[in-house]
Image 1 (cartoon, rainbow, N blue to C red):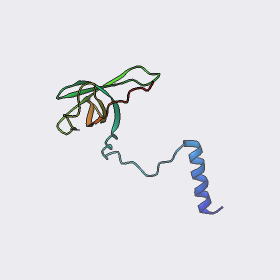
Image 2 (image 1 turned 60 degrees about the vertical axis):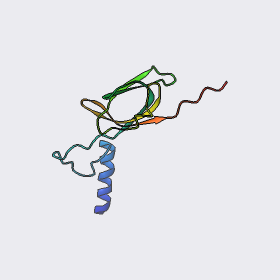
Image 3 (image 1 turned 180 degrees about the vertical axis):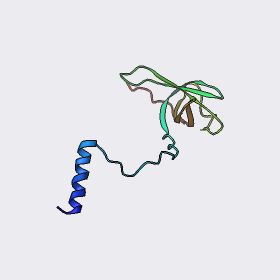
Image 4 (image 1 turned 135 degrees about the vertical axis):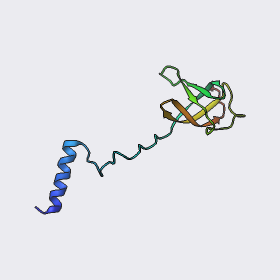
Length: 114
């Protein structure tokens, strides 16, 4: 058996036994990567200078409501965002709470057809 096939065999056994193999060594001193932004869409139920509360109701699920922190870096058009308005919030989870990175106003929901 050549060296090339021994390496392939070792990798195959490693994948079967361990599930995955590390591609490269991790540096324990390296800073952790920033969490990826997440999205939450719904209807604004509360709004002030420091927080926005958004609620949504999905079919087959209970009402879900979240509060997001608004700071000076949060991008939003305050003229278009109002109570009972539809929005999508792009946010990041932080130790102090969910920080809104961007709040986008959405058009009103279409009325249900008869």
